[in-house]
Image 1 (cartoon, one colour):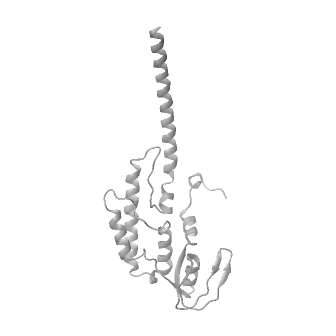
Image 2 (spheres, one colour):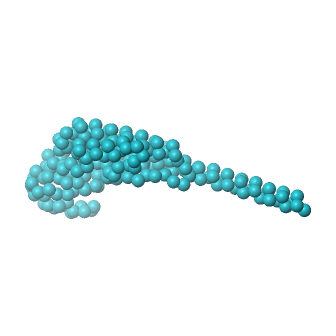
Image 3 (cartoon, one colour):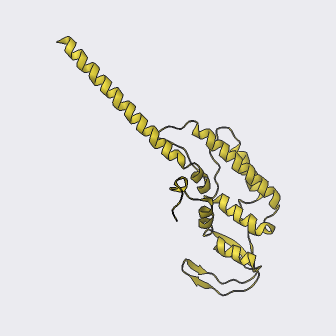
Length: 200
Protein backbone atom coordinates (compact mmCIF):
# COMPACT_ATOMS: atom_id res chain seq x y z
CA UNK A 1 0.00 0.00 0.00
CA UNK A 2 1.37 3.41 -0.96
CA UNK A 3 1.91 5.90 1.84
CA UNK A 4 0.22 9.33 1.77
CA UNK A 5 2.54 12.11 0.51
CA UNK A 6 3.07 13.55 4.01
CA UNK A 7 4.61 10.26 5.21
CA UNK A 8 6.98 9.70 2.29
CA UNK A 9 10.61 10.35 3.18
CA UNK A 10 9.97 10.16 6.94
CA UNK A 11 9.60 7.33 9.43
CA UNK A 12 6.40 6.84 11.38
CA UNK A 13 6.70 6.68 15.19
CA UNK A 14 5.74 3.00 14.98
CA UNK A 15 8.64 2.28 12.61
CA UNK A 16 11.09 4.05 14.91
CA UNK A 17 9.78 2.12 17.91
CA UNK A 18 10.11 -1.15 16.00
CA UNK A 19 13.70 -0.32 15.06
CA UNK A 20 14.57 0.53 18.68
CA UNK A 21 13.60 -2.98 19.76
CA UNK A 22 16.94 -4.22 18.40
CA UNK A 23 18.84 -2.17 20.99
CA UNK A 24 20.54 -4.38 23.60
CA UNK A 25 19.34 -4.12 27.21
CA UNK A 26 20.12 -6.08 30.35
CA UNK A 27 17.73 -8.52 31.98
CA UNK A 28 17.68 -10.66 35.10
CA UNK A 29 16.19 -14.02 34.07
CA UNK A 30 13.76 -15.78 36.37
CA UNK A 31 14.10 -19.11 34.59
CA UNK A 32 17.00 -20.98 33.07
CA UNK A 33 17.09 -21.14 29.29
CA UNK A 34 19.55 -22.53 26.78
CA UNK A 35 21.06 -20.25 24.16
CA UNK A 36 18.94 -19.76 21.03
CA UNK A 37 20.53 -19.05 17.63
CA UNK A 38 18.63 -16.44 15.61
CA UNK A 39 19.27 -14.75 12.27
CA UNK A 40 20.08 -11.47 14.02
CA UNK A 41 22.37 -13.13 16.57
CA UNK A 42 22.39 -15.71 19.34
CA UNK A 43 20.38 -15.26 22.51
CA UNK A 44 22.82 -16.15 25.31
CA UNK A 45 22.26 -18.90 27.82
CA UNK A 46 20.12 -17.58 30.69
CA UNK A 47 20.90 -18.62 34.25
CA UNK A 48 19.14 -16.84 37.16
CA UNK A 49 20.10 -14.56 38.80
CA UNK A 50 22.98 -13.77 36.44
CA UNK A 51 22.34 -10.73 34.23
CA UNK A 52 22.27 -11.14 30.46
CA UNK A 53 22.24 -8.72 27.54
CA UNK A 54 19.53 -9.27 24.92
CA UNK A 55 17.69 -7.21 22.30
CA UNK A 56 14.87 -5.11 23.72
CA UNK A 57 12.23 -7.15 21.87
CA UNK A 58 13.44 -10.33 23.56
CA UNK A 59 13.48 -8.58 26.94
CA UNK A 60 9.89 -7.41 26.39
CA UNK A 61 8.79 -10.91 25.36
CA UNK A 62 10.42 -12.53 28.40
CA UNK A 63 8.96 -9.87 30.69
CA UNK A 64 5.46 -10.44 29.31
CA UNK A 65 5.87 -14.16 29.94
CA UNK A 66 7.16 -13.45 33.47
CA UNK A 67 10.44 -15.13 32.63
CA UNK A 68 12.68 -12.12 33.29
CA UNK A 69 12.93 -8.62 34.72
CA UNK A 70 14.31 -5.75 32.64
CA UNK A 71 17.20 -3.82 34.18
CA UNK A 72 16.42 -0.13 33.81
CA UNK A 73 19.28 1.70 32.01
CA UNK A 74 21.36 4.09 34.13
CA UNK A 75 20.03 7.13 32.24
CA UNK A 76 16.41 6.06 32.97
CA UNK A 77 16.49 7.01 36.63
CA UNK A 78 15.15 9.98 38.57
CA UNK A 79 18.62 11.39 39.40
CA UNK A 80 19.97 11.00 35.86
CA UNK A 81 16.88 12.55 34.26
CA UNK A 82 16.89 15.48 36.72
CA UNK A 83 20.51 16.13 35.77
CA UNK A 84 19.64 16.06 32.05
CA UNK A 85 16.66 18.35 32.62
CA UNK A 86 18.89 20.84 34.46
CA UNK A 87 21.30 20.78 31.50
CA UNK A 88 18.46 21.45 29.06
CA UNK A 89 17.20 24.48 30.95
CA UNK A 90 20.57 26.30 30.97
CA UNK A 91 20.18 29.26 28.54
CA UNK A 92 22.24 28.80 25.40
CA UNK A 93 23.33 25.27 26.30
CA UNK A 94 23.48 22.50 23.71
CA UNK A 95 21.19 19.47 23.83
CA UNK A 96 22.18 17.10 26.62
CA UNK A 97 23.68 13.77 25.61
CA UNK A 98 21.14 10.93 25.61
CA UNK A 99 20.97 7.61 23.74
CA UNK A 100 20.00 8.11 20.09
CA UNK A 101 16.69 6.27 20.62
CA UNK A 102 16.02 7.35 24.20
CA UNK A 103 12.37 8.20 23.56
CA UNK A 104 11.53 4.86 21.98
CA UNK A 105 13.46 2.81 24.55
CA UNK A 106 12.01 4.59 27.58
CA UNK A 107 8.48 4.31 26.21
CA UNK A 108 8.85 0.57 25.56
CA UNK A 109 10.31 -0.15 29.00
CA UNK A 110 7.76 1.94 30.89
CA UNK A 111 4.90 0.42 28.93
CA UNK A 112 6.02 -3.16 29.50
CA UNK A 113 8.09 -3.13 32.69
CA UNK A 114 7.17 -0.09 34.76
CA UNK A 115 7.48 -2.25 37.88
CA UNK A 116 11.17 -2.70 37.03
CA UNK A 117 11.75 1.09 36.98
CA UNK A 118 12.25 2.72 40.36
CA UNK A 119 9.71 5.54 40.95
CA UNK A 120 8.21 5.02 37.48
CA UNK A 121 5.66 7.84 37.83
CA UNK A 122 8.37 10.42 38.55
CA UNK A 123 10.45 9.02 35.69
CA UNK A 124 7.48 9.47 33.34
CA UNK A 125 7.02 13.07 34.48
CA UNK A 126 10.70 13.87 34.07
CA UNK A 127 10.75 12.30 30.60
CA UNK A 128 7.76 14.45 29.62
CA UNK A 129 9.44 17.60 30.99
CA UNK A 130 12.70 16.70 29.27
CA UNK A 131 10.95 16.15 25.94
CA UNK A 132 9.11 19.47 26.22
CA UNK A 133 12.32 21.32 27.10
CA UNK A 134 14.13 19.80 24.11
CA UNK A 135 11.22 20.55 21.77
CA UNK A 136 11.23 24.18 22.91
CA UNK A 137 14.99 24.36 22.32
CA UNK A 138 14.59 22.83 18.85
CA UNK A 139 11.87 25.36 17.96
CA UNK A 140 14.10 28.17 19.20
CA UNK A 141 16.94 26.85 17.06
CA UNK A 142 14.72 26.88 13.96
CA UNK A 143 14.22 30.64 14.31
CA UNK A 144 17.87 31.07 13.34
CA UNK A 145 17.62 28.71 10.38
CA UNK A 146 19.74 29.49 7.33
CA UNK A 147 20.42 27.67 4.08
CA UNK A 148 23.73 26.12 5.11
CA UNK A 149 23.67 25.10 8.75
CA UNK A 150 21.39 23.44 11.30
CA UNK A 151 22.88 22.36 14.64
CA UNK A 152 21.48 18.98 15.72
CA UNK A 153 24.07 17.61 18.14
CA UNK A 154 22.65 15.04 20.58
CA UNK A 155 19.15 15.02 19.07
CA UNK A 156 17.45 11.63 19.17
CA UNK A 157 16.08 9.77 16.16
CA UNK A 158 12.47 10.61 16.96
CA UNK A 159 13.37 14.29 17.45
CA UNK A 160 15.25 14.45 14.15
CA UNK A 161 12.37 12.74 12.40
CA UNK A 162 9.97 15.38 13.72
CA UNK A 163 11.98 18.23 12.17
CA UNK A 164 12.94 16.42 8.96
CA UNK A 165 10.79 18.89 7.03
CA UNK A 166 13.47 21.49 7.82
CA UNK A 167 15.82 19.92 5.27
CA UNK A 168 13.31 20.75 2.54
CA UNK A 169 13.05 24.32 3.85
CA UNK A 170 16.85 24.58 3.73
CA UNK A 171 16.81 23.38 0.11
CA UNK A 172 14.32 26.14 -0.72
CA UNK A 173 16.51 28.71 1.05
CA UNK A 174 19.52 27.53 -0.97
CA UNK A 175 17.56 27.91 -4.22
CA UNK A 176 16.39 31.39 -3.25
CA UNK A 177 19.94 32.42 -2.38
CA UNK A 178 21.25 31.04 -5.69
CA UNK A 179 18.60 32.96 -7.65
CA UNK A 180 19.40 36.14 -5.72
CA UNK A 181 23.12 35.73 -6.41
CA UNK A 182 22.44 35.19 -10.12
CA UNK A 183 20.30 38.33 -10.22
CA UNK A 184 22.97 40.36 -8.43
CA UNK A 185 25.66 39.10 -10.81
CA UNK A 186 23.49 39.92 -13.82
CA UNK A 187 22.88 43.40 -12.44
CA UNK A 188 26.61 43.93 -11.88
CA UNK A 189 27.37 42.76 -15.43
CA UNK A 190 24.81 45.20 -16.80
CA UNK A 191 26.35 48.05 -14.80
CA UNK A 192 29.85 47.13 -15.99
CA UNK A 193 28.63 47.02 -19.59
CA UNK A 194 26.85 50.35 -19.16
CA UNK A 195 29.96 51.98 -17.65
CA UNK A 196 32.04 50.64 -20.51
CA UNK A 197 29.71 52.17 -23.08
CA UNK A 198 29.75 55.54 -21.27
CA UNK A 199 33.53 55.65 -21.31
CA UNK A 200 33.51 55.10 -25.08
